[in-house]
Image 1 (cartoon, rainbow, N blue to C red):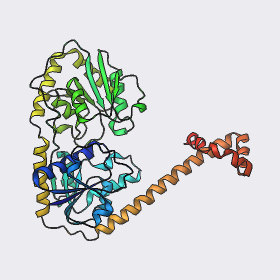
Image 2 (cartoon, rainbow, N blue to C red; image 1 turned 90 degrees about the horizontal axis):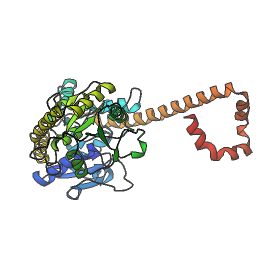
Image 3 (cartoon, helix red, strand yellow; image 1 turned 30 degrees about the vertical axis):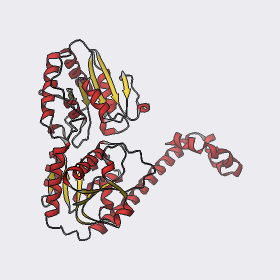
Image 4 (cartoon, rainbow, N blue to C red; image 1 turned 180 degrees about the vertical axis):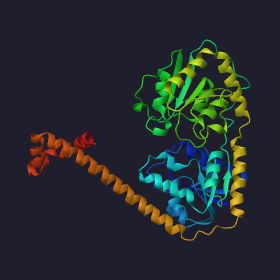
Length: 412
């Protein structure tokens, strides 16, 4: 079967890594011919995924000249290019309901939601996403394929040692600038702890960390580096607000670490409160700190949770097993009758144009609000107002031109 996975880019991220792993398994074990189609031009190739040597990586222009048995979008923006490919069947691999990544009023939010209503097949990694899509679109095929874990990299130990005297070793992973990862709140929770602890923060943006809580900041790390870190840690602290089926706590489980997490979507796939981890309330930083203090004091409870986390990990599928389920799901889509796409191609073309228009309009509104704020400042200070009126003088404009970037930052 010839399959095209449409990707926005091949930058290192969890979602892209899942697609690459599935593609690799389909090629190596199930005789699929897989092409990764990049919908945006790439200036460079800083690709850090294993297995790309066995895959075709092409741009959209090259892929348009070919024909595929199945074309699969992997991110909401890639659905705008999905129907530009010639394929017998179309599908989308959904790793989260992606409109939730954007706050209300942002143009991307409604556009991402629109792509969830396409008359094509859905493949997803989390049971909650499958249940939601089936409720919204009962007529659409929706197949559930769990993500796998690399059991060679995250090689679980036979048993874990009881840790009695060391400080509680905590791992926080994520980008502090991504609001739904909630990393700043996780750091504050650790700051509120009373018991001895050691915090390692894993992030690709260490310069953006505004906290004294981390004892160590590392990253970005390879999967091998993360496995080594989890192996010497006790707790993965994850307070995300939006997830599909998040991997870090599960990877920690494989190496003998438990987790403290919010009840974010996807946690129910493997986290059971009081059995293999602790589930804490939303926005309860003091309560989360007390949960961490409890694990630091009660080493019997900590060992109980870590042991059960390890047992949970043993029953989780490997990438080889997950790849088999993905191959079966794609085969099911290929054998099913072709849906009536009707005007879907034109709809997505119009949606792309509308998104660009909405983005431009939102930018103009931001500029208008910025100008209005500046006008209010001028009215309060007559001297500044007169200076502002004089800005159109050619000599003054030439003098102020180097200061424009600074003025824009001050007014933003």
